[in-house]
Image: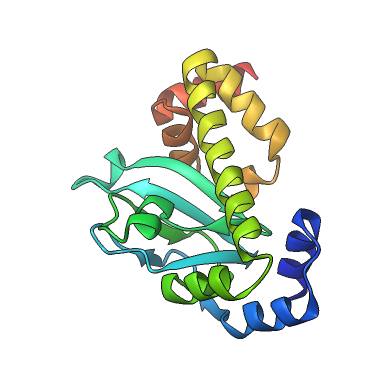
Length: 189
């Protein structure tokens, strides 16, 4: 619980009463490596904070080689099929633990209670939503403005640990190139 406390303390000061109410709603889960923990067309009922591990967001295809990876979340970040969570409609993508992953989760219903019954709940919710939006916007801008090689270099300047934990086939999909093109980029870089 300490990691999420440190994260939230960076956003705002939380009273002891609000903190106790919020943490009473959290549940810890350990997800085994390679486990898909939100399937296509399932309704996302949780938003989770990653204590350890790496999660991939992807669109599955009949041929696994054609899957589209469009996001990763890491330790000390929130993870959710957030559009499905907000609208309580089926998800158009899946979430998969790429390594053993420990998360603290809160249900949609319990988060609404936190919003309604704490002084800080709405602020934390808004700032977390803003953070998720900025990540999405940054990714879209990178896809539109940078070459594949620039996206690759930028990704590993910002997250050098990726090479150790994420298979190259997911990285190539994430930056929008084939595995062969990624191989050529890596040789040049």
